[in-house]
Length: 336
Image (cartoon, rainbow, N blue to C red; front, side, top):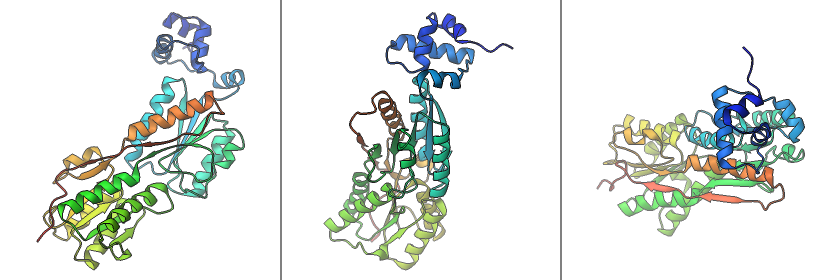
């Protein structure tokens, strides 16, 4: 079977071959109507452009690299979808890598991106400070940081409002009457862990409530870590009547630990998580959680990278998207 050519795409879309070329090279001088017709024809014909020749003509690749930190975390599923939708709409393809929160693995994938001469990279870094992003910037490969800041680098960044979300969660528990609130946190070497911890601490201090390390456990962002941390705090601090858990997977572990002790939610212990997942409403009771705009985080990161490719000298953008507390049945007034 003969593979379709750019001439076939042009005939299918009812445009010129030059217009097809401009769309595939992400030229700004194409109407949205023409762009849509070309991309639809590309999809219908399963057209595969010659990326090597395209790169030589355009001076850059049409591949975007994406390095995320935990492919098993449902948070990233929606983030990746947002990035992929933007990339596809502009004629770019996506290469996805998983660092598994391992700086050495992240370095390996950064080297792969550099060797492949990708157009740009979107990175959820394993570390806020010790990063390999300089290896990309040196070769004029633009980088957008997502979900985590990268210190002292002139790069665009997209974050959720972690501090505000954490403050909303803890304030909600205090307003219900809880005074002894346990915190299950993420590693403090990365932005979400550092900022959610800061939000918890600030609200507790404002209300003159205990903030010592006796009521805090910092874990690895995994379900098992949330389970072990919650079990430890329940055993060591019987005064605790509520937990604020800093991510979705650890919240699942915390729920398991609470039920294993025969405690009722929220009658004996309330729990609020950070990240609102589709399964949150299926739990009994449904989980109160801080919702992040995950799809919009990904979409905005993709847009910032494409803007940077079009205008390499534009000012650096630092975007923060709002979070929202969704109150459900897992949080209630404390036991007498």
